[in-house]
Image 1 (cartoon, helix red, strand yellow):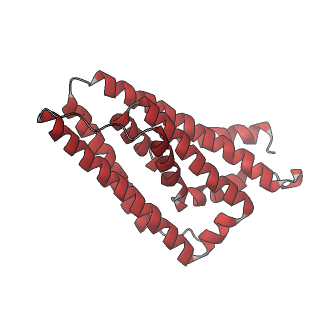
Image 2 (cartoon, rainbow, N blue to C red):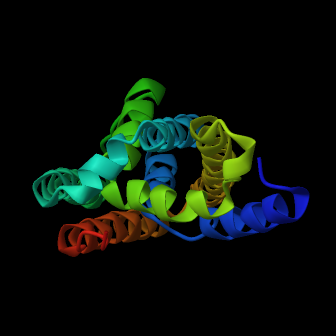
Image 3 (cartoon, one colour):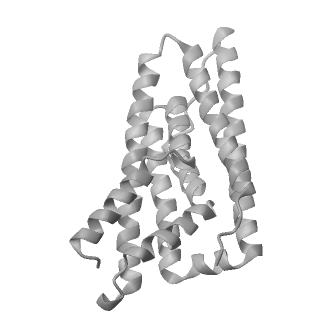
Length: 216
């Protein structure tokens, strides 16, 4: 394992990256605004598990194989991009549809539930090859070859990063939940926030579709 100084540098960099908005954060925000804190927290743990998929794959060399193959990288990024765009469109449309229903005197759509929010969170993160590229480019800089057990070091450092990401997502879930509860009498605000989250996911999906394979 890296010494304390190296680990402190890694922790600081991983923390900074954890609070940088990405697909996971926008999905958690949208899910919380739509279904409440429980769904937001469930989706946070889902994105965390999706991140660990990349960490484990990276430690086994699978991610390196995917990133080295133009065909595999393109296939994974297009699937991930399509899923993000689909989620964004669904979030945007459901926000408008539910707002119109409430204005007509109907009831808002029921929450999708924690299980579905968790599953979608896993897919949002697991289908993003840029996460794999990040781990493979970032973590090896902090590995200590002379200590041995390189794969284990990779998993431990990856777990630290994923944990920070998950904690950041949970903070977002609590913040979005507070906004949702505080704006209960202002459904228009909630609609606009959900539309914004949906639009952000669509933009991230398009950006992922246009992403180039990292240079070897």
